Amino acid sequence: QVQLVESGGGLVQPGGSLRLSCAASGSIDTVIAMGWYRQAPGKQREMVAIITSGGSTNYPDSMKGRFTISRDNAKNTVYLQMNSLRPEDTAVYYCNAHLAIPPYDYWGQGTQITVSS
Image 1 (cartoon, rainbow, N blue to C red):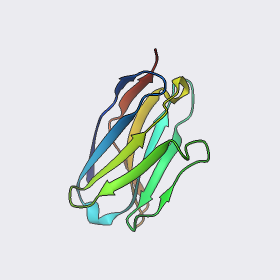
Image 2: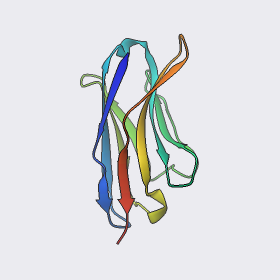
Image 3: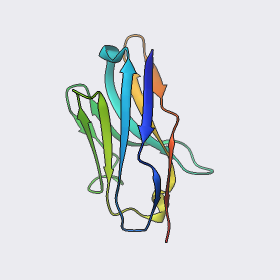
Image 4: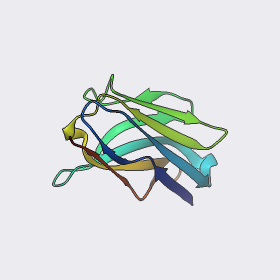
């Protein structure tokens, strides 16, 4: 079992920045990658950023340059720094932990980000 607790969401103006945190606990030795996903109303959940246990990162082209994922292994915490936020970034953001054996995904409860003036 892996537990994920997100924090850092809220209301921000266009062009602003936010940093999300995801604290992991439990059987974290089995996690091979963690990431952030988001889901806007009426849309499918989409990947925002992934970081592997080795530190490799991956972003969709639409997120590159504005979003940065990082991790603090000592705190078992993953961060998502979001800059130059746009109204279309408004969504519920979910933290994810991926296990390989057996394949399984754990999800946080989600945190709302609203980008609006």
